[in-house]
Image 1 (tube, rainbow, N blue to C red):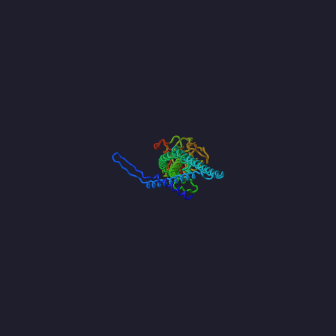
Image 2 (image 1 turned 90 degrees about the horizontal axis):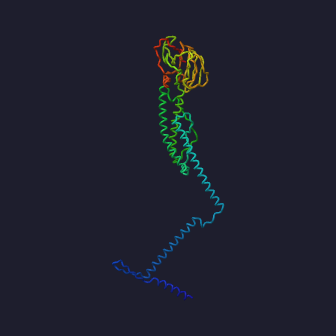
Image 3 (image 1 turned 60 degrees about the horizontal axis):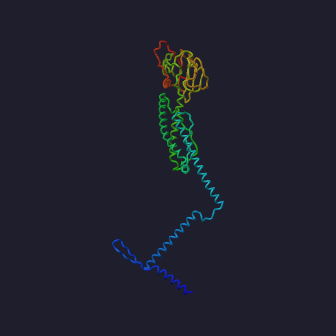
Length: 395
C-alpha cells in the first residue's frame, strides 16, 4: 500500500516536471534574429510566484466582499420590531426638530422684514407716533444652516432693506437738522422737544460668537435708524406746540415787544408782548394746539385767556371783550377762543398777545414770522393815537 502511494506521488511529480521542459524562443525584429531558451526550473519558479500572487489576490477580493456585506447589514441578525420602531422614532424626532427649526427661522426673518419695512416707511413718509420695535429676534448659526434654503429669499430682501435704511437715515438726519435750525431761530433749544430716554429692557442674551454676524450688524444699522427717527419724531411732534399761527385775521402792530414808554405814566417800562389793533368783537384764535389754563379777568390784562401748549410754552391773549373757552378745555390751532376788546389796562380796542417759555415772556415776532403769517410791520406814522396797553408789570 505504501509502495503504491509512493509510486503515485513520483508519477505525479514526473508529470509536473514534464510540463516544465526547456523551451527555445526565437525573436526577429526585421533585422536581427535572436534566440534564447528558458529552462524547466526557471519555468517552475515563475509558475510558483504567479500562483502565490493569485492566492493573495483572491484573499483580498474575498475579504473586501465580506466587509461590504457586513456593512450593508445583509449578514447581520435581523433587528427586532422594537429596535426598528426605536430607530424610526429617533429619525422622526430629528425630522420634527429640523422642521421646527425651519419654521422658526422663517417666522423670525418674516417678522424682521416686516418690522424693518415699517421703520423705513415711517421715516420716508414722515409718520409720527408710530409704534415700532427697537429690536428683532435672532437665530443661531445651527438653525440658520438647517433653514438656509428657506430663508435665502428673506435674506435677499433684507439686503435691499439695509441699503434703503442707510438712505433713510441720511434723509432723517437732514430733516432733523432743518427743523432744529428753524427752532433755534425762535430762540428755543431743540433738545427741549427730544425724548431723553427711549424705553428699553429685557434679559441679557449675549450674541453667540460667529452666529449670524451679518444679521447682528444689520440690527445695529436699523437700531441707529430707529434712534434717528425717534429724535426726528420727537422734534416734529414738539414743534406742534410752538405758536406760529396769527391770532387775528388782519395783523398790524401798535406796540412791539420790549422796553417802551408806558402809555399811562410816560416812563420806560417793559412790554411783554405785542399789541394788535382791531375793532371790538374781532375774532381771536389760538395760535397752537393746547389746553386752556386760564380764562378769566386778570388785573391789567382785563379779560385774558392763557393756553398751555406743553413743553413749557404758553400764549396769553389780553384785553378781550368776551371769553369763549373754559379752563381745562383743549383747543386746536386756529380755534376761536375770544373776541377782541379794551378791558383792563388799555387805551382802546386791541389784542395784547404774548408768548411765554418756562414762564418768561419772549418776543412773539419770530414765532409769527416763522409761519409767514406776518402781513405787515408796525406803522409808526399813525395820525390817530394808537391803541396800546398791557399789564404794568409782566405777569
